[in-house]
Amino acid sequence: MIKNKKDFWAGIFFIAFGAGAAAVAQENALGTLSRMGPGFFPTALGVILALLGCCLSLRALLFSGYGDGSLEGVNWGVLGFILGSVAVFAVSLLELGVLLSISDWGVSLLCRVSYTE
Image (tube, rainbow, N blue to C red; front, side, top):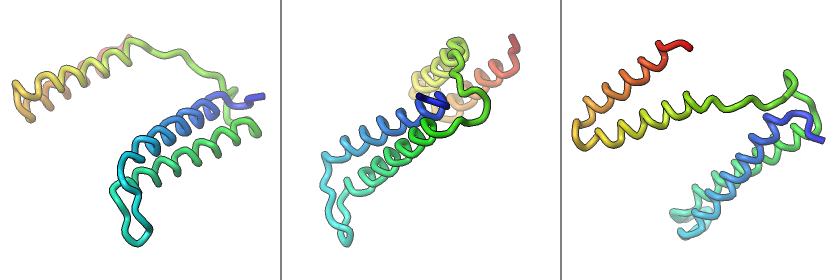
């Protein structure tokens, strides 16, 4: 029985992301400890992240955390606004340059922060 759903699903995400990073890093040579190859560090980070996810998921199965541990719904408006502002920044980067794109992105984020529902 899962006692803390937030920690459990965060651990599962860490495991999946770490395993994926370690798998992608296998395209490069690992090397040895004395002569590390280009795939050694990403593989090590992926394995460490997956192990951290295992610890987090096991803790969520054994101990109840703070609060009731229930998951909240996703605020699709905020998520869409953040992804949209990053997309506008990426598209305007070539046309406007770095400084204007950053200021455009910052203004759009400030408008969203100042807007209260």
